[in-house]
Length: 283
Image 1 (spheres, rainbow, N blue to C red):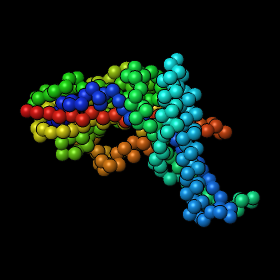
Image 2: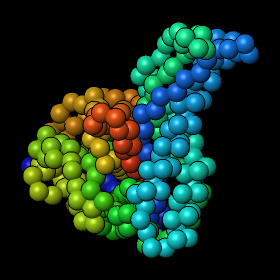
Image 3: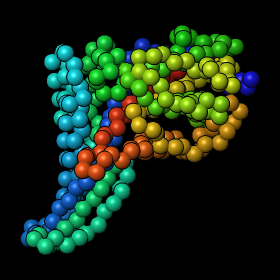
Image 4: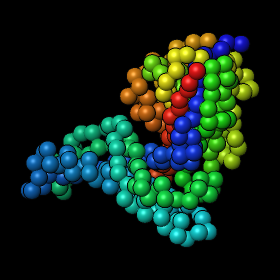
């Protein structure tokens, strides 16, 4: 069994394990026409704004209909958080000009977006809300104890409030990224909600052993109700070395593989959750 010689010691364990950033991935289309009052550039900007508006409204509707909680105030707070959401464009899927018989020159876009609820509002939710499967996807990541010393072996745990796919990344003191899950011997990265899972466990062929160099490092989890985008990987023993640039990992995992739905129905948004534990070690 290969050992991965690295440490984990939680210095902000409680805060990191309780809150995870949430968002929703949504494909949206928007359009605008020049008319007599817009330039081509203004029309393109208006079409993009239209697509972002539609993305927010669609996610609001989805969250409102899927958040079936008995606590009315809690439901109200969540919907309010999404009402004040921001939108990031993950991918420009289609764009171009076309002729409309009634309005003339028009421009349309199709984009993959990430709709991010108001972070301050989401952080105010009670801890008990994080275990409610009727709420937007939330995943937690934590370790078995707060402090590790040289030679200790570490257990990492993860849990979601509903079924999810996950990618777990470890970033060491020299900023090297290793993908712990899925790995060459444990390809299944689908987890049931309400269940606590351990890393390493099962068919994993690595151990997490505390060794120098010491310093601040992190464990990150990217999760979604849909399959996550792929990273550029190279096998390194029982895990994968991540070749994707660190700044691109978040974007690549958000390249959610949203499945097509039946004709005539809107494409279902994909809930996304990201969590991290900043860690330390000492000799």
